[in-house]
Length: 368
Image (tube, rainbow, N blue to C red; front, side, top):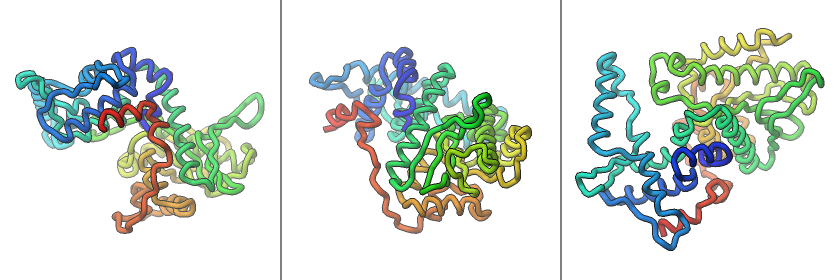
């Protein structure tokens, strides 16, 4: 998903100009390094075979982004521990690992050999970690990524569930005061049953484990509150007949679909977010409590985990259960299968890998 959202258009151009290799090349290099470090410890950096179409320097360029020398890594971790311990030693447990940013450790003292203590983090760095390579880019980059994020959501749902149709954001209302629907409208039969507001916003590692998450990432949380208000406004406008292009179910579900998991939002930030969203709809006429219904917070990964083990009716039933008090704060896949007690069969991923990673054939060559 990250490669699809960040691997095209202006995002891809920015990454390549900044780092000297394309995102596709970076992902391919990370996959090769993942397989190499998964099998052996303290091995030499792998090289690309001459008969491959990939540039041989992409491994070196990728290593600059995901590796650190052992003494430098130790010094960085020590400084981070001392900085935090001087304020609150209780927070040491929640320190973000340097390995998430630099999953490979190098040692020039031992012949420039490499080790990945947790090889899986190489793949996380090549997917969700791409966000941080683009964090200093322009707002336009994130708008592009969000658009592709929405497109992928529509594509995924329709691929998993042929019974549903999903439409993107639409304009409606008077010509002089056009309004917009939320990002995705899921239609079952003649009614819109689920409405998605997509937010590619991510929490930083620091914000995820902060005592006051909002203080660490106010702009990110404001985007989530805005998403809630956008859903509520749409439900109100549909009820009042301002949106009449399609029938909206009176109890349609609202979902804020995120790039990564914000599951902790239910217990820690939900009261604040509701208050913030209520302020954003204060000027909306005839807003009723039923319009300001509870919404579901769900990452794209969690959504696909649910879609992969459910049919259309089971999906809607899971959303219904998410409104019950006993499931407050639960992630959708766990509502579907509490405690992972049922051996649910998982359907295959509905796309060819090459559709989301154009250089997939080169990956096969690297590891054949």
